[in-house]
Image (cartoon, rainbow, N blue to C red):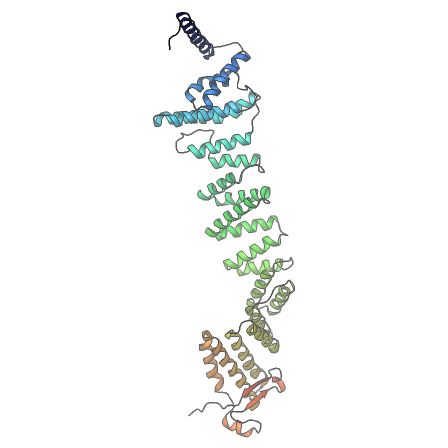
Amino acid sequence: MLFPDGTFKSRLFSIGTFCVGLLVLAASATPASGQDSEPSEQEKLRHYTLYYENFKNDNFESARSYLLWILEHAPETPDKDDDNYKRVVKLYEGLAKQAENEKTRKAYLDTAATYLTSAPQKMKKQDIKFSQFEWELRKGRFLEQHQRSLPDVEELETAAAHYRKAFELAPGEIDPYYIQQILQSYQQNNQLQKALDFANAVEAERGDDEEVAEMVNSMREDIFGMNPQAKIGYLEEQVEQHPDSTRLLTDLFNAYKRQGNVEKASTLAKRLMKENPPAETVRDIAQMRLEDGRSKAALEAYDRAVEQGAELKAEDHFNRGTAYQKMGRLAQARREYRRAIEKRKDFGRAYIAIGDLYARAVNECSGSEMKREDKAVYWAAVDMYQRAKATDPSVASTANSKIQTYRRVFPTKEDIFYRSDWEQGGTFSIDYGCYSWIGETASVRPAPSSN
């Protein structure tokens, strides 16, 4: 577009004047070397503005000299907080990212690390507001991101170590992510006791945080899965610190039991039964007492489990039957074996146990001479063994062996002949004298011929 000469000259003059003004401004804004006097507020603002505008647009190289001037002459500008120190770390990280070669990139990161470690001490002297907690997290994140590219920096430890310091400064504020990083670091470095100790500290401070509690429990199970002895050591220590904790006592009892340490489990059971352990644990204690030969104590434990609302299983009733049998209370033993069968129709061992009760009754009732009515009880015993193998093939071998043994001592043909109330193929009730509790009806049959 053509302009009249006067107008063109006027605009050209204005543009020239503007450019000169920019040069003057830039010259006055360039950091002065060796400045001794206190910079003016206008000078501080000018340097701050120039660095910040470049910084927020990722022009880190252009921002650097102005930001360094601010850190030297006015680090508190404008709000007396730690923004300028945070930004100088980010600036050098940005320069590292933009670097054209690895050597330069590492040099920039080294400078960033230096500012990162020295900033808190400087800010204390300069009376600048900052959070030590946040700076420990910042160090950890820096290391986590750049650990493979950093030379050794004396003041920097590991990411996990700085996260741990942050936790100790503000356990209620730290994000669960950093807690997890600490725990994983201990595990990866096989520092299992440190991991467990830290988990305890976390639980004490953040145990009501569901996410944190789940994380801690998962970590413990990982460690205990690799090293069951570590779990026992941990639980023993916890029980010592919290001797009235039923949960910890129960966990330790179960750990001893899984390890096969019957002696310690049995000793702890006495203490545990004074508390209010879960019914399942009481059931386990009952079985342990039975295996220890303490039948009465086993029955008492089962009774307590029932009082606490436990529903006894078929195996529990079988164990109760075994306890009564060991105590010589055969009728009560049979009652429990029958209850086991009610719970599980194919419980072959319970049928065999009842047969054994009948055979034992003969030994206890017959005295020095076995009479015909004593031998008749073996009919009932063999009937139980027959039921056992019919309902549960897994016990057939045991049942057949017992059948062969006791059939040999059935009443003979002559015994049957001399009893007016016996007829081969007929039935006979075992409900007399010492055997009155049996009350079984058996088929009359003779012992097999020895020929």
